[in-house]
Length: 223
Image (cartoon, rainbow, N blue to C red; front, side):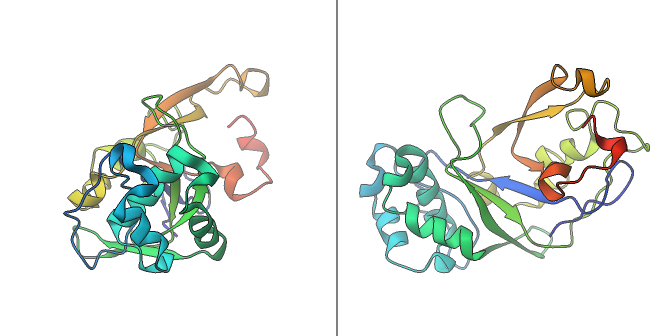
């Protein structure tokens, strides 16, 4: 679990990844067990990369095979030959890993299938991943405030273009696709919370507090 500690962060907030690709990346280096998606464009399930992934244990999927599976599932849903294996990996909590640019190893697992909307409007992200590693820490904002919410936070900038994003190796970054996330970035009390929801485009993002804990503290009821 990645814990982001600092002002404006309540409890342990986990970091969630979406990896979906548009093209087959046959140049993915060996030894990287991290996630991703390739699909070979219109070839879908006929792709040799998808077939190779189906033929082995999910825990052994290469970064390119994860990308292939994600794209195929995004295109075909439950009809994808890789769907059942990806679902089983999610239910089992199967972990993947990738080596960061600082030498640390990042572990992550599947937590969603066709869950998030791609920011370009082309459909769903086939797979959504959650990190299970510790080691990346950051404050939410320089000051003890939640002003402007997730959209205007210092942490969001770090995760999508700054120091946290730059920890991801280049081949990993190339497979991450931006998705649309809805959050209350205005506030204004419980009567205004739905009208205050706005969309952000994110490659890496946090789970909401309610996704971690069903019981919200009273002072977080607007968020």
